[in-house]
Image 1 (cartoon, rainbow, N blue to C red):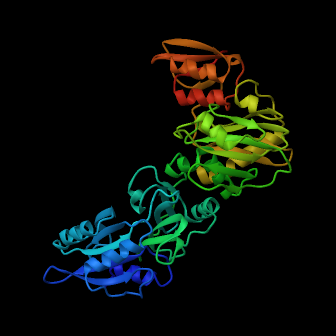
Image 2 (spheres, helix red, strand yellow):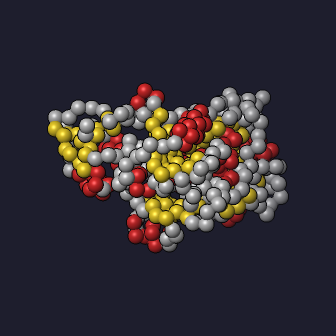
Image 3 (spheres, rainbow, N blue to C red):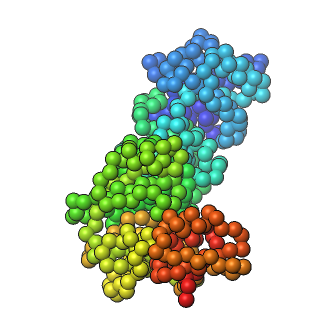
Length: 452
């Protein structure tokens, strides 16, 4: 006979960290009787005189003086109604009495703030899914981050500075949350909310972003973190975010210079500051995104002694496009410098890097710097493009608007906002198919090609 949810929580509390709780079961006469209890400061499974005293004690010990109610049927492994964030003793008791009429089993647990910068999710088999600002039921919504378990665990440890406590059997399904501050019965950083045995061992799908967690960190920060966790060379990077404490990853490059890069929620080619040298990250955020709606973090990244720099994208029909030029690539990416012929060994090294990334992520786009020996990843995004030869965005147009690359990226951005359906862009001047100019055109989705 399968164990009840409260039995499982009580058993887990011996070793794992659970939210403080008290549970109740229906009796034959329709009343409720206490079954288990784990509240700090009280002995294990302390018996309260009545429901009210149990709820009063739990509310008093809860870190946020709020509780949730989870209802379930013993025969069903999934919850029924879930009520979040109750702060009134009378309201809790009213809801318990209402649910008891349906002869449901009930667990009252402390509310733990889901908007504290941490994440909630589910680990099952070789898959881990999670999201910020939500309960473990986030996995039922779009936009959740879905990663192979080992990769997700490594990524979360880098971001939060501790390893999530999720070492369970391969066939288990574990609902969890991770918090920057200690929480729960044992006052640790990982909370286990539910544990089920004998579930299918899911394999992780292909990693993709943007997702809710990549937006939580900033797109550039997330992409670089994924590359680092996959073992690719990423320059030493420190992320200073709005929602999480600063964290670092990557490798030393041998340079004592740094780049300061802004990290928006989603890719915005060339829109926000990227500059060689150190800038005050807080002043930069205040200047470029005062309401905090676009930029999620600022990155301080070790410079690479660049012999060649450029970008690689997956083009149409699985073609890999590698472009770049000698020296640093910031002007090339902005469309101000044309691509040059690259040495064969550089192209070969970049293609080999692409193959490693694509084997784990599928089609990707990345910016790279070659120091003569190593290809360093300085930006990474997932997804293919439809670019080939001189056609940046395929399609026909009733009329073509010419754009001279010498006018710069901001002029192009402004022009695109004024265009209408049926128009296309004809690029006058040499520009890389992997540059921010091409990225911006692909994002706008108007037909675009280079002038013959």
